[in-house]
Each structure stands twice: as structure tokens, then as C-alpha cells.
Image (cartoon, rainbow, N blue to C red; front, side, top):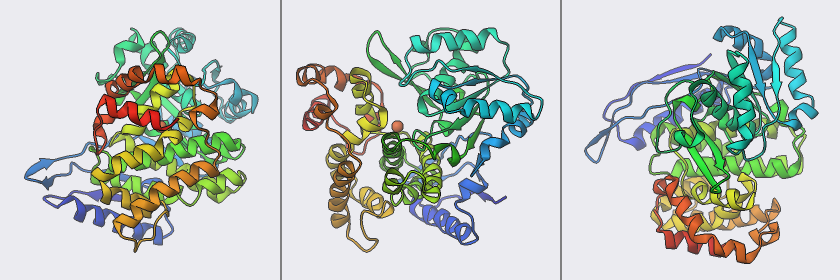
Length: 439
Ligand SMILES: [Fe+2]
């Protein structure tokens, strides 16, 4: 296993970033996909001199990650390492139907372990949709939760793990509160290459009484382990593949341009973009392409690590209200917004966006920033066309309804805090204007 110990003092961020990238290149040459993927990156407190300010970056990761084909079969070993013997699988009906939950149960039974299954989580989870899960987890004396599925089951499991152990209402745990108390330990097994929820300290739960997607953040939402098995994504339909893949790409871009970006998140975000850029179309058109699926899964996890440690920005801030009001899947609303939000934000960080274009393969390494910026907007627009991303109107949203709630959506976007991380921080009026341009 590769281990890197970084402890640098007084290095300007660029120099340090180049050094991290050089180390990653070295490991890739030795057959490692990524330092973070195949080894543990130990990141000692990092002191940087930047404009006379000493900064440090806290990096939070699951305690253990198992990455690669059939890594979900390592579940019994991971439970043993954690000292857990009574897990509850939290998932959704589709995972049961596809036999994935049963497959985990049989892997466990080979080691004389059994797991109950709670499969009533819903897409885009709400306060009401997680209540039954909270009761099940609280009353069943479970010592761990196995969160199996896409972002919604994993986000549901994170909320259930905290509420079952600490009580209260979901609203009590909403950002800006930092939820650092530990819930029931979670082992996350993602089945989409998208949300990165398996490696983030966030969950999103919708308050259906106000149509607000509540961002909840803190160490308590970080899974203790993640089993990242691309095999579980091979049968994903093309639409879900595209939506979740664009979500992952957006995480990497937003983490890289975020005001909270740091050398560590930058290195993860760039690696993620290099994996996602060339492979997103491939998995959309050929879902059975194993090497493309593997790259997307790893890219998604690295993008999750990047944004968990640097935050997302305006696309996500504006995307959540679209999802809450009009029930548009998360990745799809991100995709609708990405070209317009990038065009709005680009003048405040042209160098950063140019790097994104190069890393995604949307510009040549030798292109000027200006050319790379131009290519980025054009390529993102073309990508939406190729992946058949609808406009809000094509999705079936009523024009009057959309325009009526724009001021409320702008307020909700700003309240989430994410637009404050954007390189160009918008006013409420500017957010409304960007929403209008989507029509
Ligand atoms: Fe996302």
C-alpha cells in the first residue's frame, strides 16, 4: 500500500500543488491509478503562506476505503475491523429488486453474519420519508448501518444514523450547524458513479413543508468506511448514468473553483476531471464498458473527496431549489445549470476554469486561458445535447410556476451557503437572472 506523508511549511500553494501532482504521476507510472485510490494519503497539518496569512487544511476521509472490482465483497472483513456484528442494510426498492441487497446478505451469511434490510428510502429523501427508517434503526439495537445505493439511500442512511442515536428533528441539524456528534457508524456502498456521498460529510434532506432542500454538514455524516465497487454500476440505465456522471463532474469543477479550494482538494478535483472527462460519454453510450465504468467510479469518489473538503458552489446552490420545487433529479438540474453558471462565474476565475477545461479534455494543454474558457462553455453545452439533458420546459415544468417561484428559489439558494463559495458571488437578482436564462 502506498503511503505519502506530506508536511510542508511556507510553500506557496502552486508549488505544493505541483509537488503533489508530481508524486501522483510517479505512482501512476508504477501502476497505481491514484495515490488516493490505492493507498492512504496522510495529510499532516499543512501550513501555507498566502498573502501573509498562515492557512491550514483539515482533510476528513472515511477511516477505510476499499476500491475496485468486487470490493463490496470485503464487507465482512470491514465489519470485523470495526468490531460490528449487527448491521442494518438501508437501501431502496430497486436495490432489492436487482438482488443487490440479497447479494450482500449472502456475502455476510458466509461469515455467519446476518443483516436486516430497510428498503423504504425514497429518491430525493424528505423528512417524512426517513421517519420509518429512524424508528427501525432506533428500536433494532443495530451497531452499524450499511448504506447501499445511489445518493438518496446513502443520504437517507446518514440522516437516520444521526437521528436514531441523538433524536430531535432534521431541521435541528441544518447548516450552518456543524454536526460533529457520531451517529450509528455507516459503511457506504455506492451503486452510482455520481454523488460521492460515500466520502462526504454532507447529507441533503428536503423539508416537504417548505420545499427546502436542507444541507446538513459535519463529521457525523462521514461514513466510517466506503466500499467502492464499480461492478455495481454496470447495469445502470443510460439516463441515471448520465445524470449521476454530470453530478460527479460538477463536484470536481465546483471544488476546483470554490473559494474554499486548497492544494489537497485541487489535486483530487483535477484527478477526478481527468478520469471523468474522457469517460462520461463512453459510459452513457456503452454502459457495459468496464474500464470506463471503473474510471467514472474512481472519478466520482475523488470528486466527492474534493468537494467534501472544499465545498460546492453556485451550481449546487441553485440546483437544490429546482429539485425541491420541481422534483428534477439532482444530477439533471446540475446539468441544466452548468453551462450558464459557468459562463456567469468564469470572468472571476478564468485561470481556474481554463485548468478545468484542460483536465476534462475540453481544451488542449497548449491552449491559452482565453481559448480554453471559450471551449469549456461550448463543450459543456454540446455535452448536454449529447447526453439528452432537457431544458426545464422540456422536462415538463410549467412556465408560470417556474417564474413565480424564482425569487423564493434565489433566497433558498443563497441560504444554503453554497453560492458564497463561488468565485463570483451573485446577488439574489443575478441568481434569478441565471434561472431565467435556463428557459
Ligand atoms: Fe451533487
